[in-house]
Image 1 (cartoon, rainbow, N blue to C red):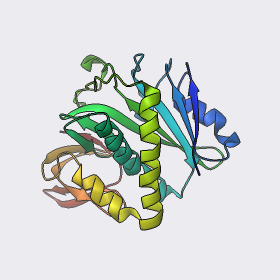
Image 2 (image 1 turned 45 degrees about the vertical axis):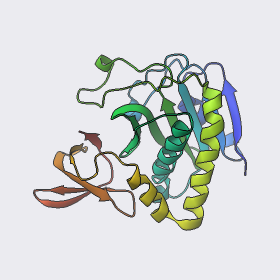
Image 3 (image 1 turned 90 degrees about the vertical axis):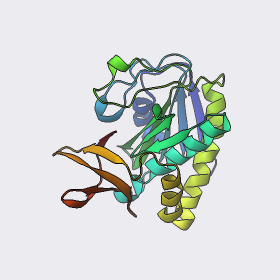
Amino acid sequence: MQPDIRVYDELDSTMDEAARQAASLAGPTWILALRQTSARGRRGRAWQHPEGNFAATLVMPAPAPPEAALRSFVAALALHDALAAFGGGDLSLKWPNDVLVGGRKVAGILLETLPAQRLAIGIGINLREAPPQEVLEEGAVAPVALGLDATPIEVLDILAPAFARWEEQLATLGFDPIRAAWLQRAARVGEPIRARTAQSTLHGIFETIDITGQLVLSTARGRQLIPAAEIFF
């Protein structure tokens, strides 16, 4: 099914608009805002959205919870394809949901479960301008702008079909090829990282991701499987 694409000059947040529309959407729908007044990222943090940057949310039927989390990897691969198509170089993927250019954050992904059994996948890209480092959490990866002349609508024209291709691969072949493709593009595999969970902070070597998308961290206490965490380099 071809997704519906809805473009708005201004919204408070594409994620909030997705929640408002979720129950009325019959199929996959992209909601794109050229401006956001109350953009947000993970854990309710403010997301800077200067005019000219990209902000969109895909609303789709929600898979079961373990499967829903895998859409973060699908979205990351689609973003990698789209940014590469526009000439983005030195791209890599940071677990669980960021895209880097030259080791700096250029895009982020946010997943939320909505009413009416819908999943929202929010995507923000620093197309024209990056937020200042001082507004970010201490230790966060430094931001960067891609510096593209492309408009958000032009980016979505590439991103939407790229997501559909990877989603079809997940649906037909399972997570194995998605996992392999993601690892080929992953940042800091085999290197020391710090993983901050809700309970503790773990230090170790980023070995891989497992068949459910969990990060596998080699620590002094052995291998740890981490389903969710903030990652610092």
